Amino acid sequence: MPYLEDLFHVTHQHILLAVRDGDAATLVERLSAHDASPAHYRVGGRMPLTGTGVGLVLLAHAPADVQEHFLERFEEGQSYDGVRTAESLRRVLAEVRRGGYAIGSKAGPEPHTTAAAPIRNADGVVAAVSVVAPSADFDAAIYVPAVRATARAVSRAMNDTRRIG
Image (cartoon, rainbow, N blue to C red; front, side, top):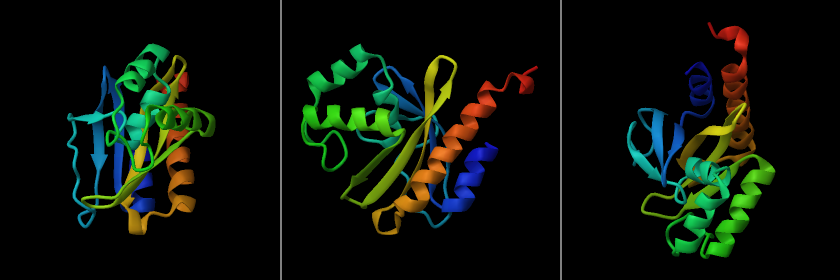
């Protein structure tokens, strides 16, 4: 939580922490400013893997058979703007793996943009963290490095065996 709170204080936007749960992501934690845009997901709720930043990160690092399941059934409108085909989703997932983060935007009903990054343990990606902001306020130069730094800090803390026990 301290790392998520730090990210929240830097951005003053929605901060999401999610894990993959089968064909969806489960929202584990959410921090939101009082004046943040309306939140569409609640803690404990399920979120689509192809329609959220945390979901894209989790899907990009899911086993190949899980990815193929989504690619075979992909329909336009299931993901962020600009991802119109299964092939474009495949490219986005490869970019997420290569770059270490996802960015996605939706035009409506309330335009918003997200940046998300993977949280890793010794076995691989176990969660994802994101910042979600109104598109007009989204500053990738601030949000992408901040969300990536938060994901790395959480990953290090989880993997630091000196802190356990």
